[in-house]
Image (cartoon, rainbow, N blue to C red; front, side, top):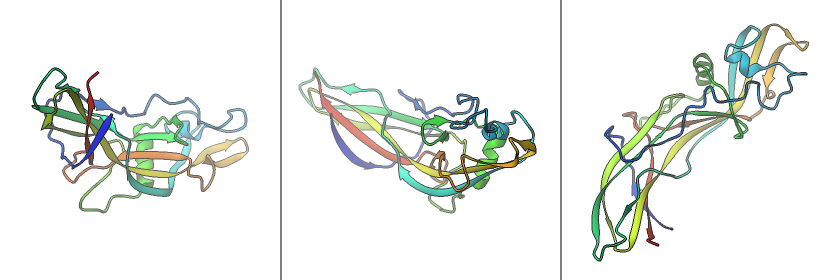
Length: 221
């Protein structure tokens, strides 16, 4: 597949799309216990932050690292083809890509995140101070538009979209109302760790998903 990079940055115009690619919100699909911790020797701080198990009086996220980077490319439109044609053909191709915040342990296992826990995580993440972009945990972001493109005879093509992602890494501090395994306070997975990962889509000031759009074309079989 031959990929032609195009410097197209499109704002989201919420219109019907031929294809909608989605990364779902991770809440509710995670392990029932804090990943990496043995329930016979450790409490469940992630569960406690989500309102499960023994009572707590503090759930706090501590950010260690944070940066913004372009994420992976995802196919964002149906394939248009000019396989049987003998001349260049012009097509109006609609692309659409949608994504949300993901929460994980060491980028390997998703973490359950309730509404209340999301607030605690958001309080620990560096806020956006830029006038050109923003990020908010849990906000679904979409980029969609229709673009006219020309396809050579014997070729097919589609649009791919790579979103900008705000990456945050850190650890979670939990204070229990009663001692758990001999301690009031627990640090998940340990104090100063960068193993709790929060990946949030970056948006333009108007709320649309920020990213790079690419056109990919390949020869028909």
